Length: 314
Image 1 (cartoon, one colour):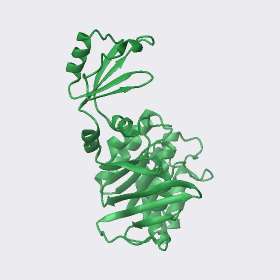
Image 2 (cartoon, one colour; image 1 turned 180 degrees about the vertical axis):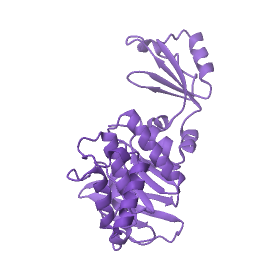
Image 3 (cartoon, helix red, strand yellow; image 1 turned 90 degrees about the horizontal axis):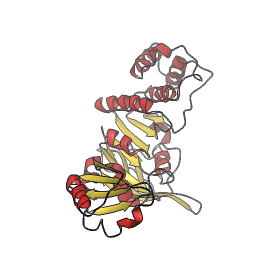
């Protein structure tokens, strides 16, 4: 059953939300709330259930079971009313390549019955916001991937949505393009726009999200702010050791008791500790001689490894 939320503060409210495709369970009884004005993230590997959850919020896929409300409305019966108040950035850009850059925004604005003068004004404002003013009259196809992504975000903002949904907004972009998209999204958050995003980039979630859930195998396995998740599931620092290929078998017993937890990865050894310098000194005293040593702060990637036991991107 799907019914409206009784929590007026939550723009998105889900309890026991489930989605299955035949025998495949894509989302398995998850609970979450998205508050007005926050940036909320779904973090997880491909196939974890992030996109299926977003499609239910976007009213294009009906829940199989559970409770879901979006903007206080029922996605099953009020889909058109909800979608009129959403901005959506899908995984793949769906820009109209037969239209110029500015025409993509102007035409989309007209779909919302926006007066022509206002549609032109919104087009100018949004092109400036995503730094594409000098490309206004260009064709879409020759644009770089980062430019297309920014144009897609601008299009999602045409109707001044109450809720902006972004499904893996920077997948496939180079680092410069990713950081520019992050900057635009951070500015939107500062303006009070409520953002829900999915990502399998942990640094992206850490940069953008006030609060997030980590999904794995269709379930939510952890929830909280990036800082709280790191504090709860990891240590203050991580000592990374790299060894020659034939050196690691000689480590047996030498790492015991030095750190709270040890993670053996194919290319390095991670020691989770509250004092990386002390751990490194202790290992040196035991005759451990890595090729390289790095002490860094814990990140969401460390949390993910702790919860799932495997790397993030599959």
